[in-house]
Length: 385
Figure 1 (spheres, rainbow, N blue to C red):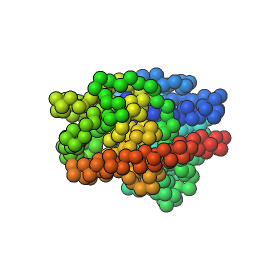
Figure 2: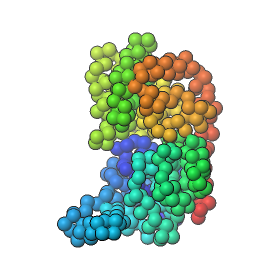
Figure 3: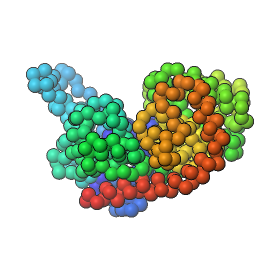
């Protein structure tokens, strides 16, 4: 069987890398003869990932409006209100791979959280018209994200794998009957043993991740995060390791964390981790931390799965749903509106510190179940074939 992972943005987002790594490893651990290829919008960032049989460059194609394709597309839009020709031309690098593969895993689960994206529906439609199996792998979708067109696209799939119960319940309630509950495969991702940088305190370093995405959605959140860091410096003896996890132009954690580092480096208590580690290397360092605070979901998954008490600067259903599945409630997850309130950040941090041992015990008890749920995705996938 030949599987194509597609709608992958590239591994400059280490969370996307974690999804690819874990999907490939989970599938090949159970079915080693399976051929797994990757269609990437940034294929050069993915060439280092092991066990992938082939990486395809499937960047979106620019359509010159004065070319024959551009003119035909413009006429169809103007006179027929039909954009399908445009989408097929723009994503032809993926579409032309359809005959070569048997099963298509859409690994851009977050794609369904960012408004209407009809180009996704068009590619999905062509996959199904070709008689291929189509699976949404590890998705998180909020009720507010759903439209009639999006629901129709989800219903057209052979299988939708929800990575937490909030999404599963939402989809079931909206009539998406082909959904199964699993967990994010990244919980099972291995870590690389890493040497800690100078200034790291063994068993007393806290990781801190912040993203431009959060900052843009709530501009006051950055100042609140500054005040939280100052609180940690003033009230504890911990070292703070600023931990980037996404390096996409215009959405680069390292750039915003450099600003934090420059403002606090005089304290001698703040480190900035490098921007050139891969997903398993970052997880190797996160696993050595005492606590973790993070905005990027897969950075927090690296912490959770390493039994590290974690405070989540949440901005979507996935953060809340993952915490609920681990703790039975949205434990230590602050919404996008709450994270501009420094008092709430500090209260949540203090709660995490005071409940450290109980949090570790809960993680130790529940993460094995989460990992087993992640493995169920492979069982559900091969039940289709």
